[in-house]
Image (cartoon, rainbow, N blue to C red; front, side, top):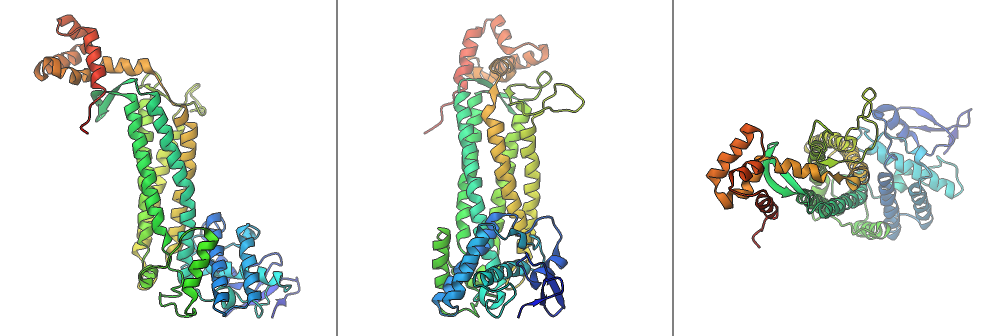
Length: 470
């Protein structure tokens, strides 16, 4: 029965003692214990809306499945469902106060949702919060469930939802690179290996490589996202399904698919699904691969745009902001730098996920909160970072055509294009002469009468369009 103190606050008791709960909050004693004992970061469980929504979707589907199996009355079911819908609408974020990184293996998180949903359902039925004899957080909202199957199910659902926007951003970035490949298709460019002059190429070919990589990153994210559709829901505490009626598992997936629009499936082996989180090793690894691959591109852009006088200066990045508080006029490649810095954080997150996946014990993994925190962080960093990188940097990149051609024509790298005409040994000797004398190979060839400047340039242009075997 509900109890109020002299200040009009709701009082709830557990085996530790009594706690007073503000009248405008819908959480209960379990949430208070979780907050008091386990607040270690700055983010609450409602920080990522997809995670909040996923938990509510699971509770919603569970209520319907319990109703179908006649272990939950229609009245209670309807109140719980409505409460879940209001949670998804964001009405009770201020009552979802457990730390995202809580260390109870997800129990505090699950109970925070159970208590908020139960108390809101009570209000919808005309009762005050805390009248748990009518709707109880454990007996009714958590019916046929355990933290051990609900938390990882919600984690997978939330990650699946969050990856949708990231994949969209990566795909759009690939399209921007592809557009630049077309724009720079005819710009002669000095290809480099080991930061040394190498071979003639087209600047468009460089950006075509970036486009191909980014398209592949998107494809791999799509593939790993699909692996998140198998959930442990219905396994209850350790995979046996103990505490749930026989028809519950089939019903809960039917309702969850209807609620989310995603074809979520039960696992082939429920014990494997409860014991192991290897899918998050794969998800995190793809996030890491995406981050470090884009960081490589960002590093390239930083080098190619270096200068404007003392560097390569072959690319002109959009001027986003002042680069120095002391050096007037200095503009830095801040957006590529942000992508590189972002990659450091994602790599660190991946290590944390790998450790958490490794240290699951026996029937469950109780380090799911750190997996949630780190995976969500990586997805958010990449989604936001890539969006800005594409729109504020890649979209506005310009090529200094004259600088690109100058660097190529003055480099001994043109020697490769001339081997078919005058032979490797002679070209090699002339190339070293070019370096020693500090004069372009084109000039030396013209003076020697071996090849005119026009013929040399024609050979270079031809060499920059390689013919690949079909």
